Each structure stands twice: as C-alpha cells, then as structure tokens.
Amino acid sequence: MNNTIIVTGGAGFIGANFVLAWVKLGLGTVVNLDKLTYAGNLENLQEVQHNPQHIFVHGDIADKALMANLLAEYRPCAVVNFAAESHVDRSIHGPEDFIQTNVVGTFHLLESVRAYWNGLGAEEKSVFRFLHVSTDEVYGSLGKDDAPFTEHHPYAPNSPYSASKAASDHLVRAYHHTYKLPTLTTNCSNNYGPHHFPEKLIPLIIHNALKGQPLPIYGNGQQIRDWLYVEDHCAAIRRVLADGRPGEVYNIGGWNEKPNLEVVKTLCRILDAKQPRKDGQSYVNQITFVTDRPGHDQRYAIDASKLANELGWRPQETFETGIEKTVDWYLAHQNWVDNVTSGEYRNWVATHYTERGEELA
Ligand code: NAD
Ligand code: TYD
Image 1 (cartoon, rainbow, N blue to C red):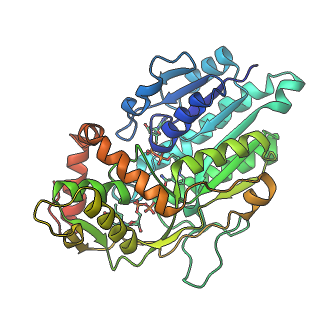
Image 2 (cartoon, protein in one colour):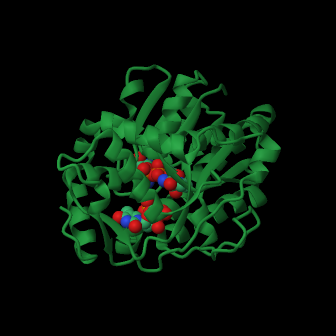
Image 3 (tube, helix red, strand yellow):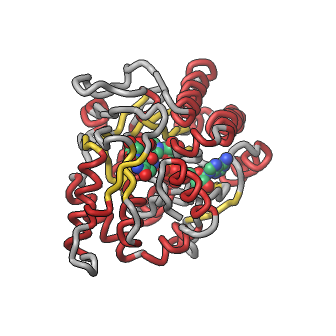
C-alpha cells in the first residue's frame, strides 16, 4: 500500500474540483474512476490530463471485476466515493438511474472494497479508509425556526434522489457496524463554484442570464439552501479523510442560508456590474416564476460544529467572495459552458422547463 487513492465520480462537479486540488497539493496519485454520464466531463480534468499523478479510468462503480482489478493494481490507502446521480429534478423525471448508481452501485463498490480490505495486512487495514460523500438532503426539510441539521437528525428523505442517497448512507453505516470496514460519511449542503453543470440553480442562472433567456424560479423562490463554495467542501473532505474517526458521520456546511430568490438577485447584480446587458437594463428583468418542483423541500441548513470542533475545519470563503469567484470563472470559461450545454442538455432543458410553462431550449 502507498499514498495512492481511488476517487469515483471525479469527472463531475465536486469530484473534479477534489481531484484537481489533490494533485495541485501534491498529496499523491489519484486513480479516477468515472462512468462519464451526461454529468461527467473530461474537460473538467484538462489541467491534470498529462500529469502522472492522475490516472483516469472509464468505468462503473457497480463493475466488481473492474474494481477488483483497480484495487489489486493500485493498492490504495483510501477510496473516496463521489459517483452518483445528483440532480433532484432528474430523479423526479426518472428515478431508475438513481437507484442503480446510488444504491446498487454503492452496494457493489462496498463489496469490492470490503474484499480488498479483508485481504490487507494488519497495518494497512488500520490505515485504510472508505469515505462516502453524501448530502444534507437525506435529513429532509426544515421549518423556518427549526435548528439546523446535526449528525443526529433523523433521516427523512423526500425526493427519489435524497432517498437513494439515504439508502447508500445506510449501507455504508451497516458495512462499518457489521464488517468493521473503516468508513467515513460526510453530509454536505448545496455546493457552488467552477465546473458546476448548468442544470443546477447557480450555473443555470448565470448561463441563462448571459444568453438573454428567462431565469426560472420555482414557486415563490422562498425556499432556503445553505450554500458552500466547492473548494471548501473539498478541504473538509481532506480533513475528514486525514483525521476523521472510522464509523463517524460529519456534516459539512457553510453557515450561509439564503432564499433562492435572493441568490438569483445577487447573481443578477454581479452580472450587471461585470457584464452589463447591451440594453442597459438589469438581468433581474429576466426573472420569471414557474411551476414549483413537486415535493419541493422548503429549507436545508447544516450545523457543521462537529467538524469545526473535532477537526478544526472552517470554510475559507464567504458567500460574497465565493459567488463572485464563481461568476468570474463562468465568464472566463464560456467555451466550457458551450461544450457542456449541447445535445443531451438541450433536450433536458426543453422537456423540463416546458412542463413548467417556459420555453428554454
Ligand atoms: P455530478 O452529477 O456533477 O457528478 C457525478 C459524477 O459521477 C459524474 O462525473 C458521473 O459521470 C459520475 N457517475 C455517475 N454514475 C456513475 C457510476 N455508476 N460509476 C462511476 N461514475 C459515475 O455530481 P456532484 O454535484 O459532483 O456530486 C458529487 C457527490 O456529492 C454526489 O454523491 C452527491 O450526492 C454529493 N453532493 C453533492 C452536492 C451538490 O451540491 N452538488 C452537495 C452535497 C453532496
Ligand atoms: P438545485 O440546484 O437543483 O439543488 P437542490 O435541489 O439539490 O437543492 O436547486 C437549488 C434550489 O433552486 C432548489 O430549491 C430548487 C431551485 N431551483 C429553481 O428555483 N429554479 C431552477 O431552474 C432550478 C434548477 C432550481
């Protein structure tokens, strides 16, 4: 065994940010296994394409033969599992892929890792970690005066996405409890930042604003999310991987609760300053209220004090600094946006927003 790690889903939004930072920090070799679904994009990994510290493997976490080979060949000291179907609206349209990857895929991955771990010597066994990246959405929805989610909050997932992530979290817990596999689970709030696929709120709004298209707000826009800059999430995962206690769960959040409408108006104001509309009007005029998401969770909020107190993690970015960096990244990477918003993306946008009363092809 050495300091090589296997990352799954490292061509997606958070996984790619994690891989890029890991290589940049010189923390060791990363073997990056990704199925390259619509959400996985090799362009996210261009910076490390020729770096020997990054090895990309195209494949599925559910492929046990492939996983067994990778584990035997690279003998990693950790597996970090980002691979998932991650979009709530898509889970409402078609839940099957979510069950397949998030539940069945995680199960097969756990089986592969358990077999590998069982075959290690005592010293290597004690060092090895399986870190499962999960979401605050497993805890369900909060009322406006409820305390933020702690790690002890009961699970109450409301969408097929969050239910499939909850199931995967339970499997990870059971593999620690039953087989003593040294697992770590992190439950994080909404991320934003570079390489975020423009089907999610923040990159969608930036994209549509610049294209002169409507900025769709579900329902009244008063739903609250707790936003964390993606690099802060990646730093938190590194802290948990280094010093988290096996079998434990760590909540990760930015202490940044914002109603959706406020987030969208903030984006409009930043864009007004950085890239004003040709007609001199504000991007706010493009805001349009559309049919709400079925079963829309009202509020998420994370209490990340366990991670802060035990492992000394704190986010580096405020929402104000993080959102500005994000807009700057999108303005500087219009080619990336153009490349990922072709084909399949257009079909999704056309179907999904037509149902909500908007034509957004
Ligand atoms: P994403 O959709 O951008 O990326 C997912 C990646 O997983 C893609 O590269 C995709 O190709 C890959 N993938 C999908 N199925 C696979 C399979 N069967 N085998 C191998 N690879 C597969 O997602 P993201 O936003 O980067 O989220 C990463 C993880 O973090 C997910 O587990 C998600 O639940 C969790 N999470 C996301 C957020 C958020 O705000 N985006 C917040 C908290 C937790
Ligand atoms: P999203 O980015 O899909 O993340 P999640 O559903 O996992 O929190 O959505 C963030 C919030 O923004 C959520 O309350 C739904 C809302 N939303 C809109 O109002 N309009 C949109 O077009 C999208 C994609 C999301």
